[in-house]
Image 1 (cartoon, rainbow, N blue to C red):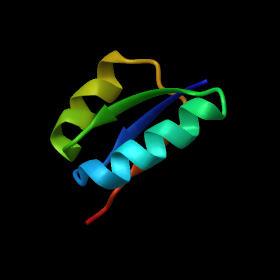
Image 2: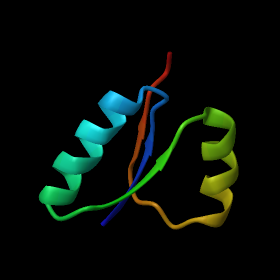
Image 3: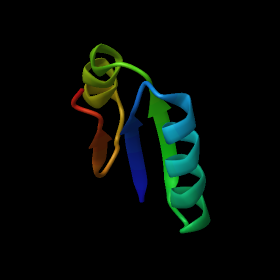
Image 4: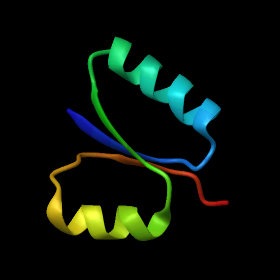
Length: 53
């Protein structure tokens, strides 16, 4: 399963990415909602983890 992680805090993103990868997921990390919006039109991510702040 491929997960799109949208998080602008590198410490949080690195921890989440590492944990998800250890659990067997493929993780793509983006730092902005704008980039995520564009990526969702092109990529085949399953769930999205989005930092709303």
